[in-house]
Length: 300
Image 1 (cartoon, rainbow, N blue to C red):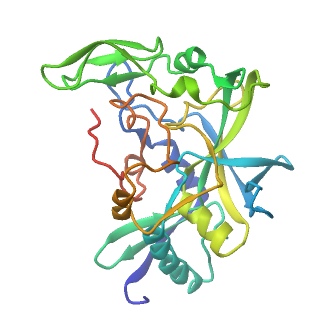
Image 2: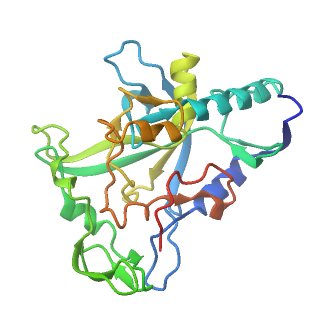
């Protein structure tokens, strides 16, 4: 392994914050067509996630001295990704570091035959969503995208805060006269009929495999970067519904997923089939080299 992964440089906290503030959405724009930056007004801190003590428990994130359950948008873990992380972990150990013990820092390394990458603590976002009898209040959620636009196949910009898109082209000829912004199953997902009003969700935005490596394979706490909105502000909603970190779906690789055409538990995107990837982040826009999108669905 030693001759294949070579250290290049450290990224200190100040630079890393700058990098994070400059990542963009892959398909969310201003009225002028400029990509929107999800973290431009966010604040960051280093917190700890602890392994769950029982199969019926969730991993917990410690925030303001209070444990909070951890959620994920991606409940599927791929062994192929974990195997690569184990090699990166060996590389970090040779430098006196570890995946679970990284501080507010990044490590840039070169993997021979693969390229240059960055590894940093996983990123967890604190979201506050409005619930109505346990269902997401989709009207209020759409309003949080005020000033946000998506593009159709003809390059037309569509403002999304009113939820209904008109004359949305899926190619150069075919269009929807009216297209609902949200996933057609969005109104079915319920977090508890007893709950109304604002509720907090701590959602993994990047690093579920790093988190799984630490919590499940190494059984150790892991440092994570917590992203929160500034006082009086909110983060843009995340691209998929928050799901409990456990239970986890385990596959050997993305290729093996085709053996199971109807996975019983997978991510549920927030937006409809044509827009479901627009809320993905372009990490490289900020200067971070991370894994690519797992599917080739076009993003306009």
